[in-house]
Length: 567
Image 1 (tube, one colour):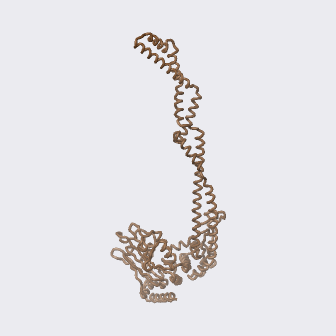
Image 2 (cartoon, rainbow, N blue to C red; image 1 turned 90 degrees about the vertical axis):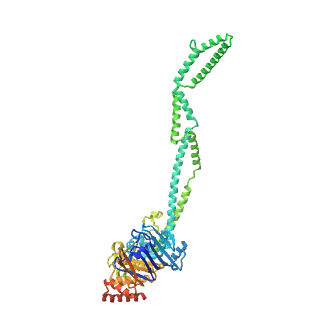
Image 3 (cartoon, helix red, strand yellow; image 1 turned 45 degrees about the vertical axis):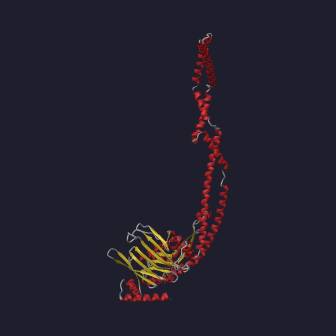
């Protein structure tokens, strides 16, 4: 339970410390007096959302702290403390939150800074906020299923189902991932196979493109080369007074002279003749290579087009293409299909779906058994809250009615395949309809309170906070509501903001909250009321003033509250 709440530099509060006891703690005051500030502070400490304007003095942070008694009866709390290795001092746990003007905040447990999600875990096991917002949640199928499961004590079993659901979800994700990869790899292998065949068909050789290019250059100039070679050979050998003939003639003449110079000249001429012979031999060899057959050129050009096309396609030269060919050939030879892995995973998924369905069947059967009992209990408690002809039915449907899809996660949620809806009727002769469609604000509030009372009987000790749940309720119903809340407070600590005197009369500790106008700003004050002060406050709640009649009526209400509380 909460031992104390300390607030400083927070909305309407410079500094405030409240001490709480066990049982029912009631907070009363005029509308707008600031009662919600107290509940809001507790909500923030346990991870509530920070809004602008919460910090009073912008130059320093707001600070909120609550002391919680560590009850050994709250097994979930004990497990959390152990999980996060949090030691307690004198069996107390201190939760705090520091909020800066820029809405940034820090959370602490026993002085150790912790993440918000950890704080929210503690919130779940320590506090149950019951507000008008809960009435809206009551209309949601998921919340109605949560109520049924908590009553049927199926939370642990549901967690097992949830784990199986998550396991299957992960397996299906993994299967899709592997199947996608397998498809991509097979597509890639098909591409490699095509490329291997294409490169093999091309029969590429290193340097082949350069050789063909040279040959084509020769063929491009073939006609000119042949003409010039023929003319050259004619000039050197064949025509009258050819170069060869003239040079030979003068070589012979010069050889007849015995002077050294003429002999040298004759020798040079002989060398020239030999050089001409070599030149003509080269020309004749070139003539043999040159072929004016156009098909040869076309073949070479076709071959070069094939080579250049591959070079452009692969963005590589011939040696690089041949290296790439070896690489992809190696990859295709080493490729291992994941077919077996896919088949094994599919078998595992099929088996896990069988388990999931079995668990879902078990959950559904237990829910249906519990629903019959819960319907009767809710009806009884609502009737006790002055709706004598109330009827409530819990109707079941399936998330997906297609039996063929039971081997698909589309047929389930994380909580099974059940979809439940509360049907309600407040009057005789009127068939129950969906609660959301037919319940008034007061009726839905009473339905929710009846549910909370039923669930509280089986809950580990918690702090239950009722924030103005008396909307739409008055007269004798408010007296019954007070008894209800008092019964819940016998096993849980309850904080209750109320405008109804009969509820306030059951308080174990009564806080009066007032808003005072100061020089610069408004500020709330909170006072723990003594018995005579309680009578004045309840008189104010009844009539708005402390008239003699109101005070007398307040005294009667307080006596009734004391009798019922002690009884």
